Image (cartoon, rainbow, N blue to C red):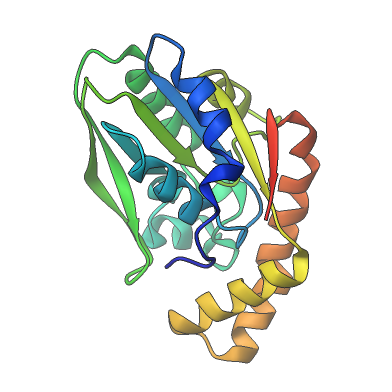
Length: 207
């Protein structure tokens, strides 16, 4: 689901052009709190560049069966509900750039990762990867950051972010009351952690 409208290209096109002037594959990270519009921006950027791929970190969610085993299902979206080292390994293979790399996607209709759904060909020029914790200071995330040429932080007003999240949770099956509770109990604490990493971003894009 796209939680926000498209971002005017003139707000980011110049910075992207400077990145693409480098004579090598570029991996651009997009981060920000839940509901900021990271997915929309990443897909929009990728759609403007030939041989570009959008690679969401959401594909590295642990499956619900594993989250249930670990007792973390009710915190899905927190940093320890992702396979961070798996994400790192895929980025390292993409950085080497000498083979097609298959990465998982995330299907919101079933709220589960789908293995091998995204093909990153060896000739891909730009990979735009978005996710919550790209700038976190706990392992493995600093090593993840080292694979990325730049990380942009998407900033949006908290009330806009919460409204988008509630609408998204309702769309995918929660009642309005359940959605509001989830935002308060899960999304807002995650957002606070992500906001603390904002000073480590290469650029902040305010929407």
